[in-house]
Amino acid sequence: MSDAPDHRPTMAAVSFGARLDWAAPWLMVPALILLGFFAIGSMSSWLTLTVSALAMGMMIFVMASGLTLVFGLMDVINFGHGAFVSVGAFVGVSTVLALGHWAGAPSLVLNLLAVGLGVLAAMLVTGVLGWIFERVIIRPVYGAHLKQILITMGGLIVVEQVIVMIWGPDEIFFARPETLKGAITFAGAALEKYRLLAVAVGLAVFVAMRLVLRRTRIGLIVRAGVENGEMVEALGYRLGMVFVGVFIAGSALAGLGGVMWGFYQEVITAGMGEDMMVLVFIVVIIGGLGSVEGAFIGALMVGLMQNYIAFLEPKAALISNIALMTAILMWRPQGMMPVVKAK
Amino acid sequence: MSDTILTLTGVQADIAQYHILQGVDLAVPRGAVTMLLGRNGVGKTTTLRTIMGHLVARQGVIGFDGMDITARATSARARLGIGYVPENMGIFSDLTVEENMVLAAVSGRLLAERRDRIFAAFPPLRTFWTSDAGTLSGGQKQMLSIARAMAEDRKLYLIDEPTKGLAPAIISTMVAALRELKDGGASILLVEQNFAVARALGDHAAVMDDGRIVWSGEMSELADDAGLQERLMGLSMEGK
Image 1 (cartoon, each protein chain N blue to C red):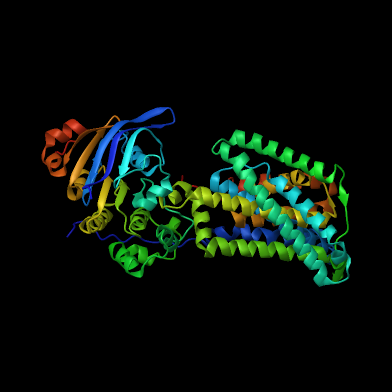
Image 2: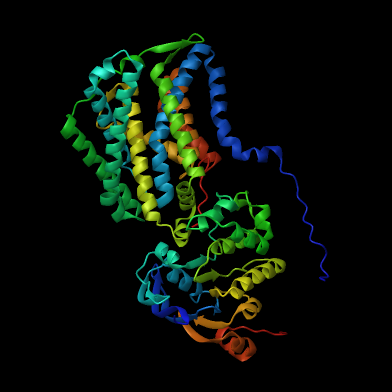
């Protein structure tokens, strides 16, 4: 027997506050909504703004989700991500416009069918474009951040010009399908039908992504790869293949986001994806690089800030999201839910 | 079937601008434990990382189980049957212990019989099976790291300093688990700074200095010759 005293470590209880620490980011969204309620004062304005904010947030999340995984998994900074948003919007909207008799009919089924086909076409094209983008543009510059920034910016410009070549340089205005126009009235507030649909779609994408990441083997490999890619390879998985898959899926999701954003604005331009990238990068950074959950919360917060501040103090709206990013990074310099890097 | 599972012939490798491995010649016998010893910074970890393919062998040949694997990808080497326990343990801290283990069973499922054997060797893993691996203590993480390599049969295990920074009680758990692996006929290349552990487990030994193997032979020969230890590793085993 050892002469050493018995090893009996004492366990001090963690304070209530510290135990809530992990949930803090999740609480930010309801806290912001509540804050908005008191600041705005009017129930109906607050409700309209909140639905609009959540719809915007969901669409930004759909665009950002792929980008954060791509960055987390292979340390690739893709400034060309906006290209997929633009291409998705043009392909999706063109498809729906081509199906004009379905989109124009006062039938929800036909309208949703038209939009569904538009979304499918957009995701298919942006998925294939993502695959080509990864092969031609990203692959030669693995591990070199500066080159990645330069060449993906170049890729973005080329894709934008191809859009101009095909669809012309002018912005295209159009109307939403018949049954997605207008609003429903709830508690005295006008809630646009399309925004409610956008919230539902965004939520569905988030739940589906979480299920894939948490419940499937490929999700397990992606999560492990974001944390320590070298070890995933040492276990026998071809991370390069997984990355290509994630890149294609992320591009297709950006395409979906593009279609959704196009129908939200009822106008599309070749530069729309590029314009969105500022918000998308803010979301990825405040969410924590590589974190889908973080991007989700970040996107909702960006949407809420933008809409509330634009209503309360329009002049401040321009800096609201930068201010939000600054505040979050002062609180958590790695973003709200950073994926632990163990490389 | 050759009685050597792994051979390195004149292997050279660099990290950034530093020339670390300067011509490593090493033969790892099948079904035995080979200790890779030497002072800090002589290239032991780099040797394992080069065998695994994390670093490119600029020159030389790495032969595994009769094949030349020098140009193969890391994942291909793993699938040929090399299990790797890195120095930093390589635990996926955002995944649960169970998810870490399931991922380690590349061919599909973690067999129940295998899981029970791992639980018997490392009881804390049963307790923390559904906890995030990031919440484990250092010793428990090391157990998980070795257990992960044991999730499936491997032809060769590369294990980098499994007892580093661990309390003596946990070191004995680790040694017992490695001995069980050894008794099962596994081939192991083990980097270890703790000479007592090396002496307890090793059949063969190779000593590195300045990016080369400077001595290789039976572990017992090295263990019994204090002068040789002093000369090769600057080791002084006073009182032993």
